[in-house]
Image (cartoon, rainbow, N blue to C red; front, top):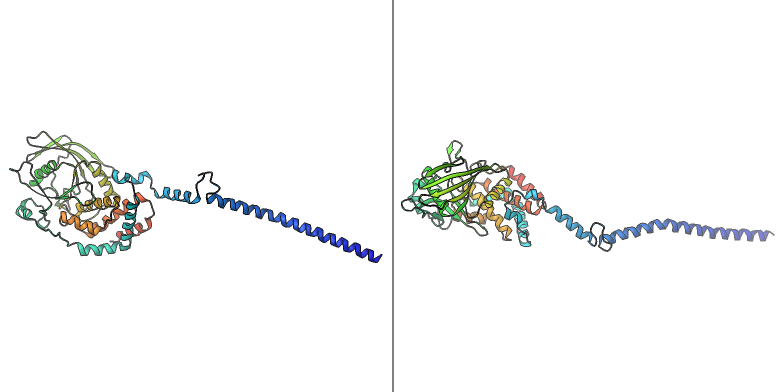
Length: 394
């Protein structure tokens, strides 16, 4: 009987062990189900991201595609941020070549830095063109505003309208550099005795826009004679040229814009010109913000159906800065390499002494940076921000 009792206990123990094993197994399976379920869900999510499962937001688009799309949307600046750009710069397609050159421009000057640019200007500021001849300038001293700012013979504008009896000389040079779509004339601010010459040049060369970048009086010194009527419907005769102001408006950046008609004596074919007067740019200095210069160029190009006249007082510092920016941006958009030193020399080959100060030299790069950031988004922001902060310390 004792043996039978032992066998019963052993059988019960065996059953309990088996049942316990089943219980443990059941618990184990139950506890594994959430894990497996989570793993399946995670795997499904991964598959969706890899493009296998699709997405409710973008069916069939891979996660890489969605990220790329988001980055592209982030990189593309809002339309209002492009509003200050000339229309043809704002609408231009940025192809791979243009993007490459813009990236290279930022990388090059971010590495060179403000101090590097200042050193570069110190070395090149005395540059003169290979063909440094100016005999007509020397022979016509009374028509030159500054005796040390020469007018190169090879590129000077030669007046033919009403010559003779009028003089065929004016302190002005034609500038058309590689990559630029428009022809510029860089000239001095007219003297009292050359106002008629100035308007003869405008009519002769088919000028449709003039950018006047100086005040008539700066720091107590005459920088430019008033060479157009300031009031609407006012007529003034300058020598053999009749000039009439037809309209006066003010741009949102504060530029005064005059619609002016110029008519030679004995001629029925008048020339209508938009004259943009910018008075906030200090002599030998730079505007308050790079966007101001881009806004000026927008206004210039909007009205430029023909040749563009740009002048300040001497027609080299502020004038040269504007033309240099226009050239560099034009080259970049065409996917061509653009280096300030090359443009500086090419500009001086046409208009001697262009770009007068290191601040103007550095500012040109800042303006181009502003353009690049406006068109390509914020991927260059850290480098551009550092450069601009260094420029403030000048």
